[in-house]
Length: 88
Image (cartoon, rainbow, N blue to C red; front, side, top):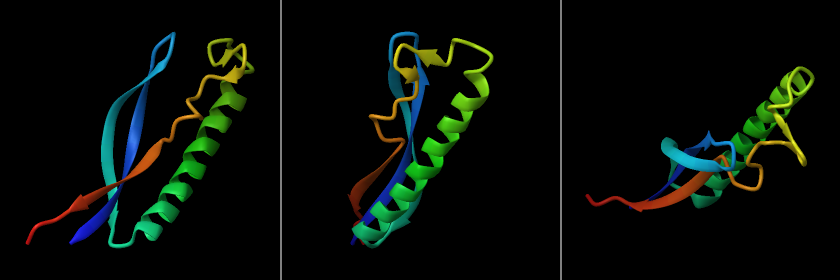
């Protein structure tokens, strides 16, 4: 049986870059389409959380803003779908 697992990717901040520190499985699906749909929902929630943090902290500190704005790894996904084959 093949399952599709959505896992959260935890990015650790460094002054120069973000590094993937941990990937934790959060939900499994029998359908790849269902897993991808759930992943996209999770991405939207997490991106909105980062945007709210920028709005809150950018007003009071320069830490959260770089030359290009928010220092969130938006070009990298916060969640991913992995495929696993389970043996009976």
